[in-house]
Length: 361
Image (tube, rainbow, N blue to C red; front, top):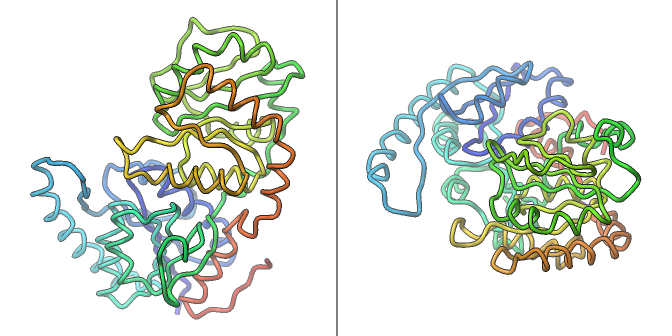
């Protein structure tokens, strides 16, 4: 039987990049890789840039926590997507499906179960998203970034793996970044507001920028359409989005300030970079980032600054606090058993596929 795997997950970049982290290992071991996602979702844009992965579009619908007429029509898209997934999976006959969650994954997981394909699920956040809650009964294994006991996931299905981390993120060059940015030898702060940017983080930084630049250099990833040309000055570099250079910027920075999405914070853990985490408030999210940030603070990996408390003064105070304690925070992160979950997740995939594990670690 050919070593063939199907990956799924989408809706946000956070549901795609852990899949991308697995691809080089799977290709190295001779797997044929397929990806099921929506026609126009961010997952298609990201995966079609990855060599060696065949993309199959299906229909799916979102699960919204607010009223919209689409809540009445999207379930039919999910049902159609289940049929499409089942047909594709029966044609491909993969050994295993790996699902990273997001609304697109639900019809794929249900289709896999119907087609007799074992499912390995991964949950990044401190609380499971709705898609993964719906998919969990169909899974053979549920991998978690946080301790499954704390997530309330009981039984033999749950395995604490950590989160898959892209290898390239660990190979940054700090000297190259400092030269390219034209920074002096002051410490470097990396501000990131998530893939869409954060108006609240951007605004607080702008107000505090003069004071911050007296002691630090600043890399500011502002989000698409959010550049402010009036802020051009020595020691401050702003970008809408960073891709290839991100590894170098991570290597250069002394600490990161930004949102508390699971992928970002586990990349920080892997790189042992302390942080000031400003989670999305509960009013505009399900509160998962607050729990993520609270956990990281409890482990002394960084500090949490809630958006309701975010001011230029509180931002500067939090930065000084973390910078002063950066050594002890890095030491705490170094002791973590789940700094990089890539190998742990791969092990569960091979186990579900009933294949010997070929990688060290």
